[in-house]
Each structure stands twice: as C-alpha cells, then as structure tokens.
Length: 155
Image 1: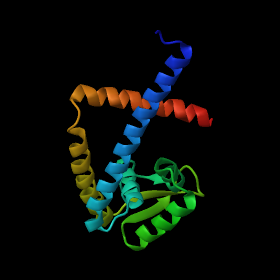
Image 2: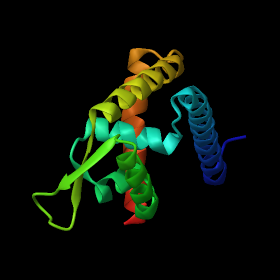
Image 3: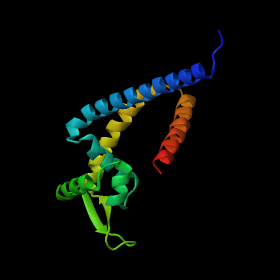
C-alpha cells in the first residue's frame, strides 16, 4: 500500500511534532539544570539571562535588553533597578537617545556574570556531549532557520 498525500502530510506533521517535543524536553531539562546550578549564586534564570546579555553586549539599552531576554520592559526595569542597588549594573546616558540609558556591568556584576558563565558553560558542555561537532553545526543552522521562519510568522 503506497502512501498518499494525506499520509505523507501526517508523517511530516508527526516527525515535526516529535522533533519539536524533543527540543522542548531538552530546553526544559537545560533550564531546570541551569536553575539548580545557578541557585548557589543566588541567581534566577532571568537574572542569569540579563547578566549574560550585558556581558556579551556592554552598553545596550533597557529596551534592547528586554527584547533580547523576551521579557516585559517593566520586569527588566525592576530587575535593573535592583541590580543597580546591588552594585551589579550601572546606567549611563545614551549618546544616541537622551531618553535612554546604556547599561553596563560594574566590576562586582562582571565577577558574578563570569561565575554564571562558568555554570552555563558546564551545563551546555554536558548537554553537547550527545553531539559531534558536525551535529552541533547542523543543529545551529537548523535552529537559526527555524527561528527565522517563526519570526516571519509574527511579522
């Protein structure tokens, strides 16, 4: 018995769903493991995400940070205010937009971000053990393409 178009579509849908569920499962496991290992540093996943973004992109605005973290501006604003009080982040006037502030890590914030990066590196390395270098390149290419397709759906 040959597969008709309906069966082919169902198989593709099933394959896509199974792949998606695998990605979701790994994402959830990674998040849970990262959260557990960040706990001794006193960091939540969002706080970690903020520190990693500021470590990579010094001088970004709160709006840019909010977009990169997929988090509401109000939540990021409250977190940055707390990080500022804790001497982890400093604000400076944006040279491009007088209404905006550029965010940077303080030396204390940089040290905490480095500690968090070490945790992230350990967790990601453990996860990556399941793949060869070429597998990781294929995954990166595929996930970047999938991300683009999903972004296009939102536009």
